[in-house]
Amino acid sequence: MGVANVAARPSTRGIVTATLPDLAYDYGALEPVISGEIMQLHHAKHHNTYVNNFNVAMEKYAEAELKGDVGTMISLQGAIKFNGGGHVNHSMFWKNLAPPGECEPPLGELLSMIERDFGSLDALKSKFAAQTIAVQGSGWGWLGLEKATGKLAVATTANQDPCSTTGLTPLLGVDVWEHAYYLQYKNVRPDYINAIWDVVNWKDVAGNLEDAK
Ligand SMILES: [Fe+2]
Image 1 (cartoon, rainbow, N blue to C red):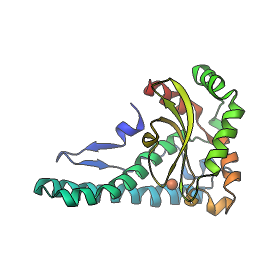
Image 2: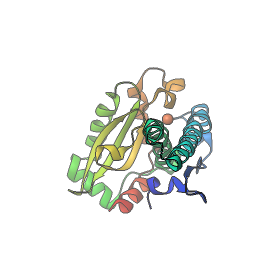
Image 3: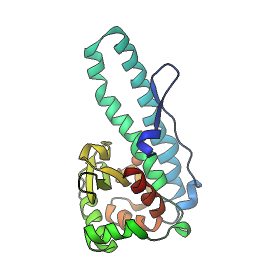
């Protein structure tokens, strides 16, 4: 079951609520690629804020729905998309990463698909980097599966729009909000994107591919 399906669950009242997931590694475990300070702020502050704001918006939405207040329901949709997207995206991102000593290159079917659809792993990295570096303002870079064709593709989204809005099922997401890298890489997003491959957990990406099929 993919992250998107387990990131938020209905409560006993029937309202979907989100919970900040624990990381599978310590905040400093991704160093030197991502500093412990960035990881601590990113997870405990930024992601937690999306969780809290999503839950508040969903509570308000449920109240409006009970009253049949369609106007309020519509007005809450932006907050639900932004904060719910932030929660789903970050929940996937943490699992897509692992300490550098534990990361191995993609293997098997995932590698075969990468070579078929991009030419090589390096070609995928180049395409991913070019598109993700070019995201204007805040957003995400994605490697996803196009279910209709069974092919892998690279996409980007703005703000916290989830990968699903592109039509792809997400396998790997990279956060390119400045909060993800600025304390360490300053304004040089390309250095962050080029470094992040050393902490990409390709086993998790392969697991997402299995789940997506
Ligand atoms: Fe983020």
